[in-house]
Amino acid sequence: MYAVIATGGKQYSVRVGDTLDVEKLAAGDDGTVSLRPVLLVGDDGALTTAADALAGATVRATVVEQVKGPKLTVFKYKNKTGYRNRNGHRQPLTRIRVDEIAT
Image (cartoon, rainbow, N blue to C red; front, side):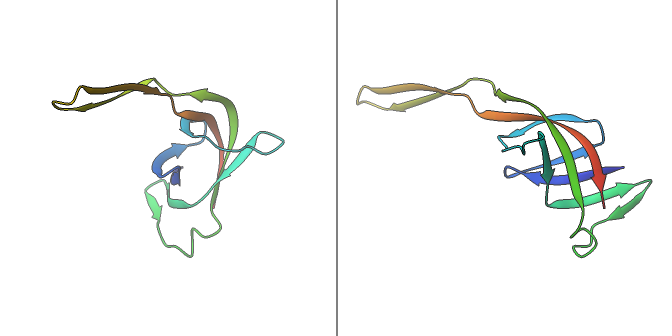
């Protein structure tokens, strides 16, 4: 069984047991998060895409750790003016492990 979820402005295809990095999420006291909306659920060749059928679907995951993404270099430059600006950025991410896909 797999599902397609949307979180942090991106879509991810997940299965039970998958570990993935998503945009930073606030976890509950027990370290679990419920990911919604679920856009698609597939099980043995049968796809569920209807909005009313997926209204109650959730993907439950456990937060493994809070991490930072790779360092990105941001370089700004303007021609003929001597303007140069170099800056770095590391996106905060949450590493999660998918525990359950409930429909």
